[in-house]
Length: 450
Ligand code: PXG
Ligand code: PLP
Image (cartoon, rainbow, N blue to C red; front, side):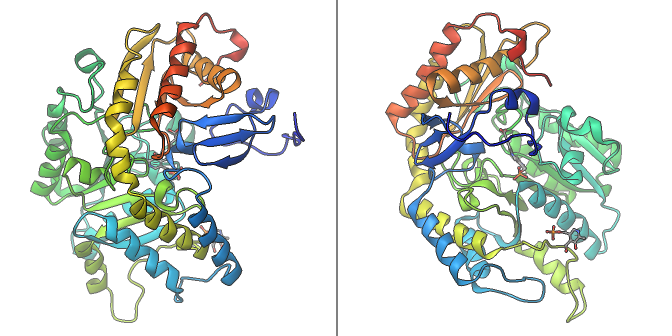
């Protein structure tokens, strides 16, 4: 093993620290579809890092843009100052955004983008003299990052329970995962659109629609194990929000930038929200960046409400629109366009779907869900040891088969770079199939603990 560093001081995010440090899994370089480990193995990246390296690793045009900007101007303040690249980055983002969403607020990641969007929603209503609208509605099993706003509207118990009360006035829709009715559906589930009606019939009836500022959902729930919207579900949410003057926010941190074969999930579903939250693929993950893409009317309400020469929105980060991130975003969006990567993802999706569903019938496979270049494989857990089965598959794929997958609970989630080819799709699913066929009891020492 080459030069393993002292691992004592770094407190790792969302990681079983002690387990990891007992046998570190170290990545030292990356190129295209592969990582290289510290022991010199080439690992197929089945997860695009964490759903973010959509154009593949180390794209030369993105690398060059960052290098050039670092040598030109490292940092420029954006509070009452400007630099050209951030304006260019906003225009580039708007050029691939749905019609009507044409104002961009930048921040540094998905969590900040979520909190920014929630603040925009609350302030927007107040600016228009509709300050009663303070409630936010999220969804069970929703992941909206780890800020206090994001965990309040989020619906993952483990991410909330340790941190006391968060925002008041938040409620949650039921999530639409229904394995009993929809197991092994290819693409969008047939059953469950009626779950969206609960927004009107249950939540708005309870709280009074006039008190609700915004509904925030991931068009496809990624991080909680690939939960797809049933056919017609998002259209219903849109119609209900329209009926009651409630803003609809799509959190597209995962679904943005071609993951479903279109620029945004909004395009895939033909449902346009009032705001899109994005991050990850925005810069191909080469420099952290997040953004909220806003309907012009929302932005304009701020401009009209504030006195001239006054700050319209009291919000922003030191690193909002950082020059290196702006350079990376411009370059990444150019790469997506020039290389037709969103279309490529769409074209590869049927092959990916076939490969995913070839796992049906293998030991412990309870459900396979897929859309675009995303796949969720839900496994029967080991009784009394939630997460252990999937985590064991993850470890075997990494150590024995040189393939990186991601697991959440007992669900395997795959989201490769959009440049994946057919042979690599075969390798990815073939590896998982081999490991599943060999699944036996997991030693307690290997079991992950939630
Ligand atoms: N919203 C959504 C829908 C996300 O998926 C965030 C917000 C937060 O973004 P940041 O950049 O603050 O992490 C996310 C992030 C996984 C995984 O493996 C998913 C995310 C992050 C890390 C791991 O499922 N999603
Ligand atoms: N804490 C202190 C003391 C600060 O001065 C600042 C920013 O100036 C922050 C937190 C926020 O940091 P950031 O803008 O990087 O989110």
